[in-house]
Length: 346
Image (cartoon, rainbow, N blue to C red):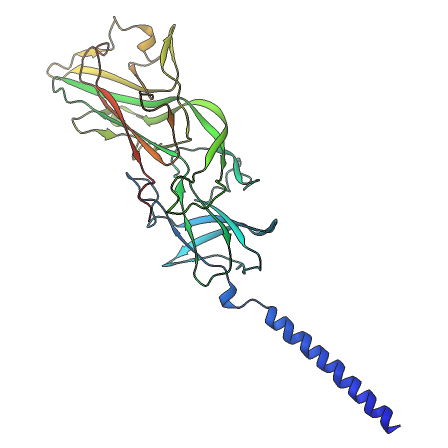
């Protein structure tokens, strides 16, 4: 009898020991601070105002996939002083992770449903948001934060207007980009966007919503822009329309009573500075150069050149236009330069 009691006692102790071992294993499996995934981020240096830089990058949305499973599903990461925080925290799995991120948070848009199959579908471009993206693939557990190197997903457009002829005064009421696509699907690259791999870039497909978009709008006579000798981008502090979806450009041509192709339109009036007499548009101005229901005439400039047939992601296109001739049917000085505003990456 005593033997049986001793056996039961041993069995009881073994059972208790087993439970204790199970608890110990569970505690060891619990994440610790060193297993928390953390982030840091850098952005390209902007070529002009309004471009996002490392200093101005405040938030991004990140997705993390591992072995076909979703580890982070559109998690918002925000800057907190010198670090980046998010909640709830995610922990390193055994298998490598592929990270995909974009900034800023555009998921509140009714046209954005998040990330689908490695892309952002049907992004409707508002024109004043510098959309950035980053990819970091095959990342295994590390103590240091995961560095996300962001790139510009859009093209930046600057229309610089000036007039150096003091004998005339040019007053501008509207500036437009005509026949551009406003919506498309952004496709993340399949490789990491490292500083050492500048050729790894995303792409745009499924372009739609061809439209004419205002860069500058004078709501009243007080808002009309009078050109000076200093080239000025008048969309700044007005409509702030600086970013466009990368797309092929179509050569501008006059077809009957209207223009076709992708072009810049400047609606303006030209006056004699000394007398104030209006020089253009006038009674001899052809109908296709008149702005309906307006006192303005329109001057059209192509977006294409010998070297530019498309707008590429991460490139800034600066269109320099001088209006110096009172008769706009004469040649107007016009050129375009390109600045890669994603080349100076940290």
